[in-house]
Image (cartoon, rainbow over all chains, first blue to last red; front, side):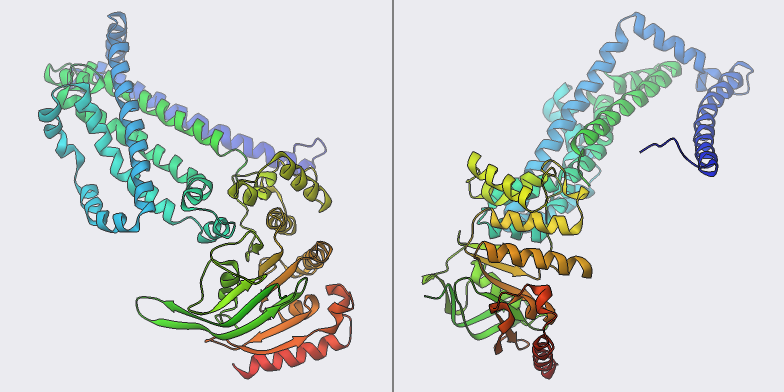
Length: 268
Length: 254
């Protein structure tokens, strides 16, 4: 609670803390501006080859051109849509499978080595298989995004389920609770923080899956733009796409953080 | 008729590396509205005994009956309080107190009103919509008690219910809990390793031997029958005699 009768020392302390926070923000901002300024200057003075390294003004121009041609929203839209789809399906299916593993010790013991092996495969290696099976379609891209996130989700959630305090389960059982009730009254609500953790990891992973999928199998999306730009040596287009990708990932991550704040309200 | 009766009860635990005889030939009768405390060293099977009465475990041999009926699975007549409050941090105080009713599908409007009255009566009025993290240890323990009482059990099993509290709180929460349980005419079986706690609260104190747990002796405590509260009991001269006798027995096995 803020008061208004603080001692002078305390006010000085508060002021110092505010100053510190301001300095950090300022330095962060300067670093960003400095980086772009240096890049711009280096390219225009010929210290680096602007054809290979591009430069901020050209990246901006490329972005504006994309936007004016109506291409920007189309590519952004595809990438976001594929990511969200892969992310939602991957997370939901992962949680469902984790519930199954929790429910049956037998199934979880049988599946254990397979999950470990599947987890250690670089999922990107499966890309060409998806393309052959599903064609150069959005389905292949989404399959890629799902495959990247689903195994991690299963492992994180199953571990989370098993770590729920056994005494909380015992409590429900003392009231005569069934396994079904243990799942819905204890295991799932207690695992919400784990779920949020899995969502945070999956936002990044699904984006990786989507971009790789677009590299291999797409005619639209930021991944497609990056590959296309690379092939025609239009580095400004590549850089613009990468920066847009950065923005997309930040927004998606921020979305999950908002969800976290809503869900964790009132919790310790 | 006895409220709770254990006849020749033995229990084996099985693990991959061993088979453990946790309890052997336990015979115990608890009368209606009696408060029985069970003391013994860690691992002597005291908590196992509660699990048997609650129906979470079944005896390997022998039988457990409540009101003459064999215990098979958890019974509505029994309420179980664990070592800590285990309030769910994602539920409000009211929803925590209603957990048992909810699990038994008895969360009626009337039941909710009763639980609200209980919260009010036990100093938790106005906290219904708070989350457990905002409450002190003593308050949380009272919510746990209300959660247990809400399902209206006749028999209460208390498994070291005050062990998570600091000394000051142990005494005051213990005082309140005993008062509440006496008012509501509950039959109580409490497990503890705190001898003064056992002597101050119980009608009878059961001393158990180390594994395999058997009943070594039973002490009838006169002060409880006279209606003294736990704190008052601690002031009575015989308190130390009971303490000394039980302490000696527990140490004889060590």
